[in-house]
Length: 125
Length: 497
Image 1: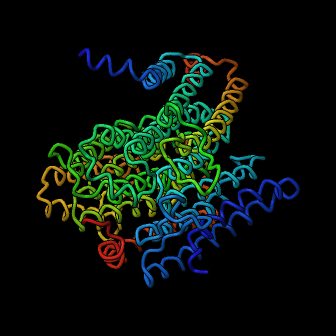
Image 2: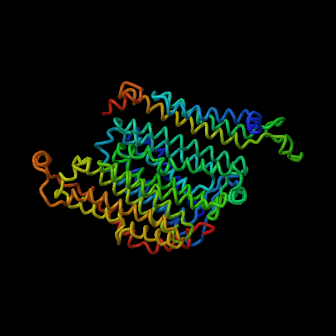
């Protein structure tokens, strides 16, 4: 039990990921306001990005730029660049999602005059 | 030239989707011919691609000359080439049909409609070909974003459904991305071939198992497997009639194909986690989905909702088929997938036409138009036969091979699930057809009044042709099941089966 807790506390970035992910999920489920749901969704997406970045974090590592071709490459000395690249792509995807979702919310607000899910459902009937 | 085929197939809808809004600014009426041209080019290229793959075997396409584990790789094998034909031909048919269904319902949004549809088709192509986990994620998102916009393009009630679809769909993609992160953390690679060398030995690692579960959950939301199907019925019911055939026939099936790729080409058919075969678990999930989906379909009263839940049930059947662990079951499952794609397109064509032309939404409305529409009634009977699984429709042969595969695997539970789902399907079709053919006069009074109010207008020829073509395709698929099943059992077979 204590080992487990210790293992968690030694990896605060992963702990932060779990908290953010669940927090976002909770906001998505519990809040009736559509914009707040989107904020929850955004937190979930960002927490996954944090997870990616946490994977590549390394103590004492530097940016992966090869200074001279003559030296042998020491993989341990560089931070892994691939998760960063993936994160960058995922951010682009996330921004696009946010754009589409905000556009949808804007049209919903113009159509129904409210952002509260329960009120919208009432108006639908 | 032929080695660039997969990319050309992908680029023709993508480039047109980018050009279309620019051209559409000045000439809105050009958008439809342009889009149709793109999809026809794509169909022709897919056919050539199939021939090339049969002649020369699997093609592996690497982008910008970066070889496989470092760069992104596309795999153009038997399965992908066959499914590309499905995607392109159905897109072509659905787009032709959309032209006749669209003008009234889309208003001035014709240009964005065609651009988004092409983007969706391009994304589906990418998912079918991609041999890289992260690349699949990108295409899943591109396709999903166009789908959200398409569902809401008409405004009104569909907006709320589109928003729900967006929330759940994006959650699905996030879960998928999380699964990719887990797999990457353990193996250090994203290429499926590279992963396939490392994953089977690592199945005791909790991170890999967790990652696979997240991958399945993410794709499960996309393919609407019970109990992750909540977004689908609303989205399909409220989506414009020009949109729902595309979504219903293609997007869920392609998500399922993405999982089939991961399951067979990465994890391996014989994978076991703690002595439990992974395929066995999937087949159980499929059995539950097949039966529950059909039960839910039986409880609906709106036509489109019945069809939507029928589709959910069929996703379960396909999952049973591909997870039986033998060639017969796999071929049956994929054949049923192709059949179901055609069938769902046909059903939503019909539901759209019935709704727009005759105002038929619910089961009770069906009674009102009895006798006016022999053409539609004929199509409906063909679809019913295909959905329940009577010969000579494609549905019969798909189910036949799935059951044969299940018997071969001595998996009597899934035989039972297929049979129960079929009986339930029969039950909800009886509910529909009873209202079409019931001999007694409809309940007097209100129905009579409505019938005289609605003139017995005939369908335009174009709609007759499009509904007739897909109905014919269903039967044609059944008649040509032998070569397709043969192809699936020999050329498109995954490793390890």
